[in-house]
Length: 177
Image (cartoon, rainbow, N blue to C red; front, side):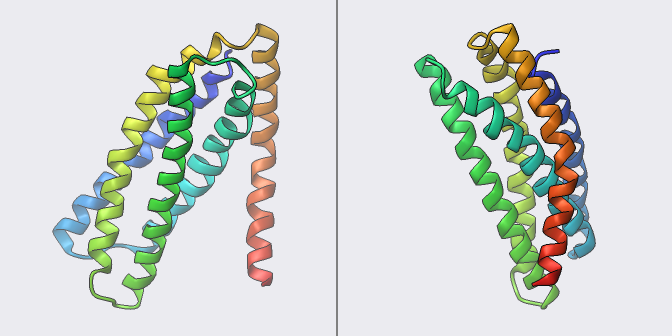
């Protein structure tokens, strides 16, 4: 398996969460309210799975190794765009969390901001995923030898195994503070 295989499989689960977000958008539009617990669940998924686990492997393993290669201008540009897009996704999630807190406090405009950030996420992720799957991942493999690809895949499996420990260490540290 190529090291992009697990990343593309992860994209399919992220797409399913985007479908759940679309459903919540429709619910908000119909009911003029949201479920803060569902928002928390979506935020946890995006932060832990999509960002720390998935984007973590992209940035900390794939992009790190590709940065050492002589990429074409096109591939270099796309890789930098992808990193910036990851940052954009993080900012949307931060805004969503802040809006949810304001919603819980009964602040005016909070639900509209929640709706806006959810809409932005469901617009952002499919385009971002398509760019990775169609425009970058396969092209990037030409820069890596078979041995480098195998080592990268093993590093990704090791990365995945450590994620649950990182998540719950952070939970405990946050609760202790």
